Amino acid sequence: MLSARRRRQRGFTLIELMIGVALLAFVLMLGVPAFGTFLQNQKLRDNAAVTLAAVQFARAEAIRLNANVEFLLTDDTPNLGNFTALGESATGKNFLIRGNVYNPASGQNQMTMLTMKSAAEGSGSPGTTNVEVLATTGRVVFTPLGSTTNAADEVIQITNPAGGECKAAGGPMRCMNVVVTRGGQVRMCDPAVNAAGDTRRC
Image (cartoon, rainbow, N blue to C red; front, side, top):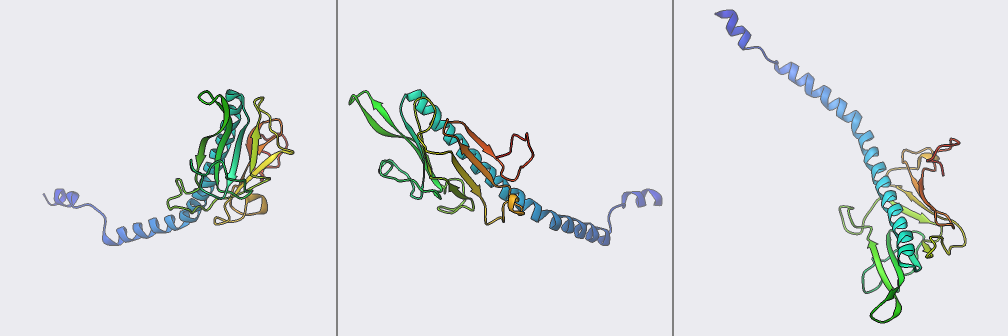
């Protein structure tokens, strides 16, 4: 009878629970900085992927519409009222895609906005984002043949100074580049990768 009661009362003592909580807190403290770096790097990767998809979309639309289509980085937030007047910015965090598209109603080509994105979208607070952009010019014009009218390749560097230096400079951030060649090829690459034959190499 007594041994059965003792078996039912098995459990953890207060000291054992406190040691367990202390060990858990220690493990979490070790993991928090690495997790923070992971989140910052993921933000970089997501931004680069969105930029890559937008540039590829602009090229596909130029071919589909048989018209010149422009990918434009801009400092101003694009909308239907201002998209025709916006100019490029090499450090613009917003982008828009517009084209001189044939309008059957008027029988003429007309500047049309095909899509846009504000830097505030998905950032958690309007007008703020840790990701920074530095492009060669901030403007790529695709022709109906899929090539560009740019004088040189366009390189869009995507960094996150709030998270630290890029890996190529010895920091923790996995910065990304989106490269658009004059021939119209679009790809994403990692400037920290130097190995010959690695497809991630810039």
